[in-house]
Image 1 (cartoon, helix red, strand yellow):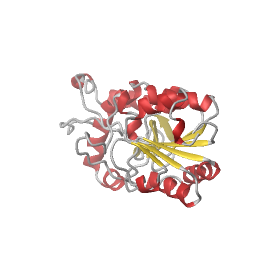
Image 2 (cartoon, helix red, strand yellow):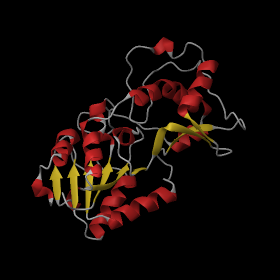
Image 3 (spheres, rainbow, N blue to C red):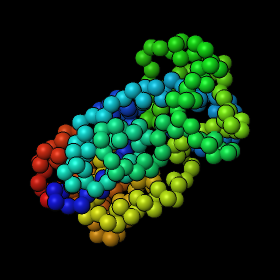
Image 4 (cartoon, rainbow, N blue to C red):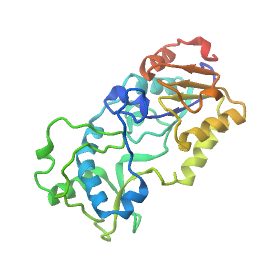
Length: 266
């Protein structure tokens, strides 16, 4: 790997050591991610989501990068890693110091109005939601389970009051690409350009179950770029990989940043 222009594709598995669960590792509980159609088509579902997110985003905002994130930032500073394409919305690569990051699915920290297109920070929206729902967050101050999309697992949300866009009153949605929604074309094109210019594609912590990430692995394979996959469990890209490392991301990436694993194509 060292000496090669490396692009990294990361998934939820790289963030588990920061306390954010993933969707599909062997030890993960069954999860049913929200779809775009559910969010825009059902006001009750939307209220339920915002109640859970009102708690969950705080947990994600408070998380800190782990050994794997920091190792990739070091590899970028040393010139080995050229860029990161992440399917995660947790901003942990940026927090770790990585500078060239494509947040393929957006981030938890921004909210968009689906009517007028205005974007606001999640911090700013939190203030308005707290004013509309006094005491709600405090009433759920104990330990809660949070999914990878910042959705807290709580049951009772019928009394929660969502808010609309401060500018036009329209429907607000986290600026995150939901299942059933397309990644913005500009992000996809930029990610393909990075893969096309790479000399090695490293996949870290992704099962590549959805096409959003798998397409970049297929592109690398098609144009003859070696692929290394680090992931616990089977991925849809295993047959295309020059090397598959069945392990957690943190120890493997730390070893790579320290000059280990010379057999990965260095």
